[in-house]
Image (cartoon, rainbow, N blue to C red; front, side, top):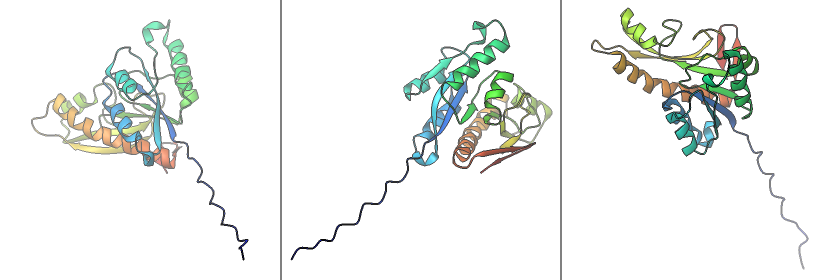
Length: 218
């Protein structure tokens, strides 16, 4: 006697979860980019760098991206008649990669109205000081000159100001009596890379919400 029983159907395959798309803007050697590239190889991280855009040709960060198989673009300010035109070109170069989040990782230009109109509220930046103290290009030098005993780094939401956007996260670094700008900055960079990778991963997995001056992840 043969059985007419049929095997149970296989369970449906789990849905494929699309990794959160990151575009990273760079200007230099790319130490923060390298940290993000190392993190994005783990599927559990939840985010993946899909494009790297530089305002300078020939920088080390572009080499890192190419070695990782990540497409790159260069949008140099000198190639445009004015800053507004450059800002629009930068916006379009980033838009090509359809980012969920844009990360400014050592990017040494201020973005403008066109860029913020397209990516405002989902662009983050790092700064090597505990904002709102010591904004600008010389945060480490200014903190040392002021005589602070602790410094650190901040990850913020980018707005139209200079390091003025809502703060997402911060971490502290002790200032040593014999610190120079270079030695303090090197220790801050180590903490900055770790904090940036953590924040971007949490944004990818839980989202970013900005409510006035408050930036909330998750």
